Image (cartoon, rainbow, N blue to C red):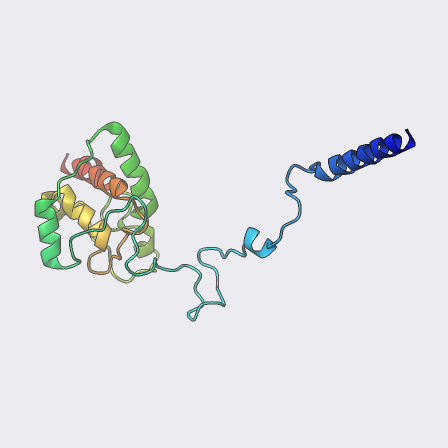
Length: 192
């Protein structure tokens, strides 16, 4: 009988200890971490200095020959011939709906406005402030009015002249939507 009481008391004590140690006090404490340096990485801000890199830059280009998820490799080279071929062969798969044009404007304001300006005439802040010595191309020139959506898509993807490639920053659908915005809003406002 004493033995049975002792076993019951020890079981109860063990149960209380187990219950007390298994409770989460803060709902954020997950208990003991075996490798805290892997759980809480030391991340660098995009444009911060990174002493681990030879050039001290934190922002890196993707590794060569890697393909991001949902991104199909672009088949046209960054050459004048590639630009003409892309303009002739590619067709914008995105319908010119108000929602798509609105999304194109949002993306234009994020990625293009600083250089090409609000009107698309190349008078963006980076040029007018003197930060860029070369004026960006006008998207509302006679030459650009004659070009198809695919030409804009190609230039956004691989760049042209002093403009760098933006394919690694802008998804393909959004590149087409920017082209829709340029053709259906910026250029229409110029013609009228």
